[in-house]
Image (tube, rainbow over all chains, first blue to last red; front, side, top):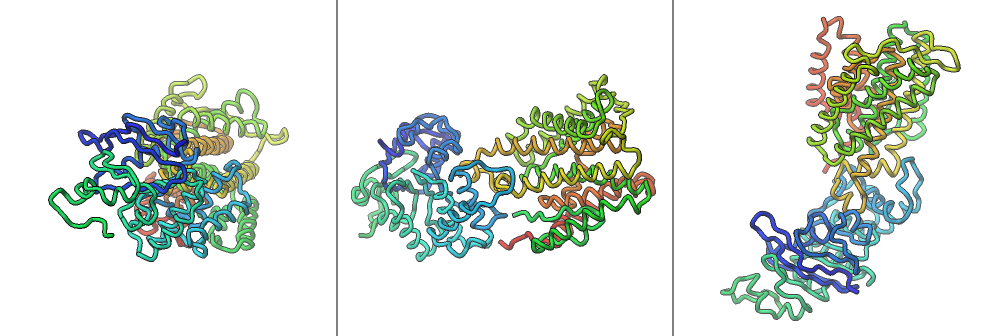
Length: 252
Length: 330
């Protein structure tokens, strides 16, 4: 069984076919990278997979189950969880409150309309914050966090949903090299039960984390395979740099 | 976290410091309630009646603050449920019984039902679209009230509402009515305050801050918005039943645009999201409209307009924001 299978997925905006008949298969436990030049349709494909955007044609299957017609909320409840490209959080909350919101929803129990002491929720939130390296930042309001810390908080928030499939949209964008290295360590340490599909421009990160890579170009899949195949592909080099350019895209 | 600690209402409000330690907040709360309870013993009947009107409008404003301040849904049609509750409570008092909890419960039920019947359209939108949809719903409900003359009395209003009876005896004077309204106000305020501090309330603030992200972490936001819309309608219905008990007359303007706009004004002046700020705003609105208005030759609303402009310029977070630096640096 596959963790995620997309077949013939398409979406256009007016005359622009942002995603055009994409087939994508992600194996369980994979660290699958989605790369491609700007405008390749990576973000649109992500939004089709998470359900924030409806596909015009095609199917999305999550662990063998057809979720094409389900909303983003239902897909999240089935184990699909995401981080956003531009950290998108809650301006009036602290880091711990943010994570607690997702923990309360996914760790059983109703959302009570009356005040509760929620020691278990708070403890789990602190544990997740520690996991992403925000151990002592729980009581800091979100707007006071640095950009890198917000991206880390995004990851904690996504993990709090107890995902089986984790979708990361440019997790390292705007991060310092140190923050990026810490993120890589965190993602490498994730248990194999969590399948990861991620979009990333930082090709160093892609090739140190990914065990399979799909290259999108102009809304279509250019190539899908092992990192080494992608590295040596002439077509990928052309898509990124144009046919006339002979620079090395992937430094050895 | 929206800091909501003490149900401060005019009288003792100046003493409230919302970020105070728990113990002090309780002391302030008890003091405010004690002062409010003692007021009819010292004030003239007219002043007591004005204070009663303030409490009625304050509970209505608090129910609206649950939508505007906590959930981020600015409504211009909330008076529809206030008016529906008032008409229902008045009608039941005239035709069935005025025995204490009955008009109240009927008002709450009808307010919630009206919100349930109309809210599902509104909660599918947000922001300006929500504002316009609720405005339209409010106008439609008011037209219904105008047309359904056999029940509402049409343009003449619903007259001859008997006073509420508690334990068999009618509330004979302004002081007893005040205590009845105060008791119901405190219960209603406590209910909204508890909901705002619950996990459900945290989810509502999440929706206010970032609805798409709430959906992405698995919250069915439309359902939550619908639930809080119905709850706010129910509390507005309770406030409406208090209006029927206090004024013993319900007219179409009570469910119309101007009443809804005044409530929104009260919430904004007081500081959206703090609940007790909405009470301060309601006090100001009622005082200017009813107490100050006559001495200005009926130009009370002009003063309200000026106050509103000043508040938006000087205190963008309302009265509640003055002592409460909620604006965390970003």
